[in-house]
Length: 174
Image (cartoon, rainbow, N blue to C red; front, side, top):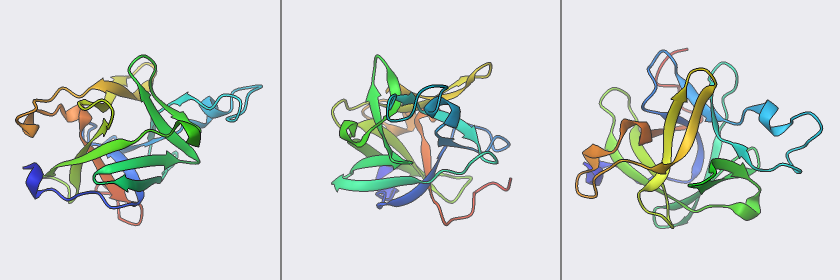
């Protein structure tokens, strides 16, 4: 199915997980109080977790830039995303930019968008997925995507993402 999917173009996108139910309709963003804790600034503490946020709270648009064939950098509010299997997925300054392989998987059957995985170029099979911890928050984690190298249908649904152009209407009404 991946051969039918479309390569992602550079641009501004709202990023949403396929895993969450339609009633949640969340997007990824920076939780502001993590950036500006009392007595600190984003400059002093540039590495903060990548969290999920309800759409009514904020609709962040990611800047996705192409750096090569199927390879991208992703930035939100001046911060790029860095993955580390020990510390997870975090926002960092531009010097810490990670190169991501954003791989088309399939066209979604329910919504009019492609589904993608986001993997580290340096560590194939290691990438972004959703971890739900209802008592704290839904966090975007970094680790093994749980897929078979032979059949992309085996990608864990927690690792499938919509890249919705920020001028597009949301696939689910709020």
